[in-house]
Length: 478
Image (cartoon, rainbow, N blue to C red):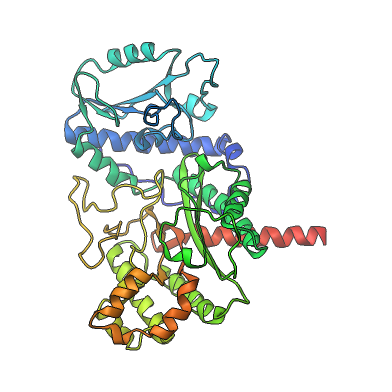
């Protein structure tokens, strides 16, 4: 069966009601979800046929407990399962997909007085073939009966059942390749996740402006998004001042930063398991050298938006990454951080000390979604070049891919000390760098959907919608 392609059209943020969970149970969303399942069925049918499997069993996964403990970390489903059954807390369930694309959900809803048993929303119960089991033992028997004949793959992090082939690479590679193209349903979810994250970012900025600590900002972010910490797609990076030079800063100071210079907040949200991933950098107006640093921030923001005009189907993501480094070279030389031409700064690799990570990554059920380093459906790998070892995406841009664009400029002592000590050390304006070091760094990150002629920027649209809503509220209460 030929691989079905998702409809390139998807609703704009204005078409998604404020409560996405309520929207997800409307007739229109049901139709998008059913279309989503049809596309998944076609993808899996093709992949199973190409790899000569009769069926695949996708296990949602089990709770994993801490070492020598009866407590577990937050449970997250196998993403291959979650793509079919989004946003349902159903550890112990499985989905069987046959090579004709038909799928059956083996749903575990065990009777329990310690925890609330899971329940299926109508959207899923009415669209999938579902068998409900009251015990794990009964579900296991049902699975054995359903997969007892033929060649069966099993995708799970645990040991495979007898007779199943565990995590076959050729099958997973094909599905990972297809997952980069998001269906209309998946784009609905990511639009809603983005709107939710933007509410959190606005609340975090207000908290920082009022002098609150990293810890307090994290709490305000959770309240504004309506998430618990466990429901976030990743641990929020809330970095004040020089903490912003740590790319994945993982702590929250309880004391407010003094003096207040910068806030770099890299924080997302989720809707039915699909993630948004947004970063913004704020600069205090009255900090010493704030004018210098804000000029760098504003220049990077302008270059990040200019990069969007280069994104279109057929472009290599690596070319976008190199364009970002050329932009960073222009900024650093124009603002006298590097004393050479932009061409020299790029050619000699000086920008790598200021931008050590990749320009972005695929986004979806996983924040760093799968398939970013594949060249084709069979799993041929295109490793990042030696000059950019942290690049997570080397694919060619295609319609309905969703990925991040997140250039940065950082003042990281470890990297700048190496640059200073090297053959190009004289090109570094050490005096200016020392003045900028306490601000940490800058990152601007948006989430975009590739269209036939460019991109739709989910993040900027959500911020614009939030500003319009705030203005309208002000007029109503003015």
